[in-house]
Image 1 (cartoon, rainbow, N blue to C red):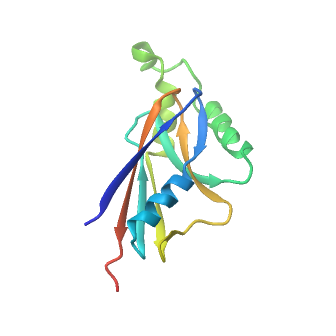
Image 2 (image 1 turned 30 degrees about the vertical axis):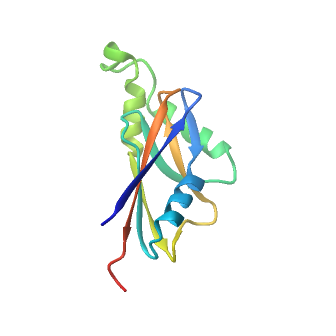
Length: 138
């Protein structure tokens, strides 16, 4: 039966990209599954999970800038309620989860890939859920 683990990330800015790969790797190592799938999920409507470049922090800022151009602030009906509609829309575009293969007990990511928490309505404390499903093949 897959075990669900969680951890929390405190964001410090309204828009932020945080590499959560080290914590996810730690959870995968502790799980002990040889091969399978690792799902990383945030149960929040104004944050997302993405896999992207890890060598240049400008990529995260570029992604935030691109989303800001696609989804401008302050023009949406939901803004009349709590002024964060753009954050909801950006999170919906990227999505709340990513699934990464696990092989020989390690995440299978490309050389330049990391798992990123995308904050669109910070600062906040974000909950990250990690679930590893072991392969049924022996």
